[in-house]
Every structure is written in C-alpha cells, then in structure tokens.
Length: 106
Image 1: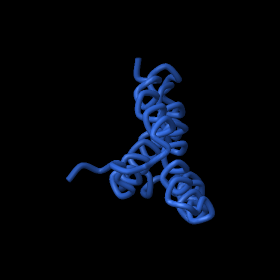
Image 2: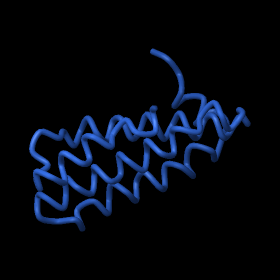
Image 3: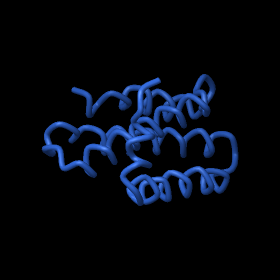
Image 4: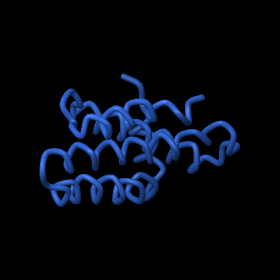
C-alpha cells in the first residue's frame, strides 16, 4: 500500500497540469527523511523487507519534484536539488558517526 502513496497526487498534478498546492520545502524535507532512513537501513544491513517501500517512495517524490519545476517552467532548476540528494547518499555513509547523527532523535 505504501508503494502507491503518492500515485493519486502525481496523477492529480499531471491531470491539472499544475503544481499549485505542492510545497517544495515540505517535499524536500520528506525526501531527505526518506533518504536518510533508507541509507541507515542499508548501512546497518537491515533485512530488505523492512525498507523496501522507501526506494519507491523516493522515486515518487522525485517525480513530484520534477513536476513542480516542469509546471513552473524550468526543469533545469531541479538539477541542484537532485545533485544534493544523490551526493547525500554517499556522504551519509562516509563515516559511521555521520549516519548516526543524521538518525539521532531530538
């Protein structure tokens, strides 16, 4: 069920041909949270079934991110955001303390 979480939103955005109502900061925050959680699970070798839906959710959020920039007129503006997300994947696993700090509760 989680794998289809964003599909209604994606189809509504595509049907309306507008990203109005989507919040870029909240989407980026959600993407960052999914990315950190997924990287943590992979880093510590948790069973695949405990985090299998996260790559799908990340892909759906990236599609929404691209929709925001597409319907606002410039897909190329998404490049820095995607570059930061991709580089974060590698930075999080450079040292154990980085991934632990990223997952630390307040």
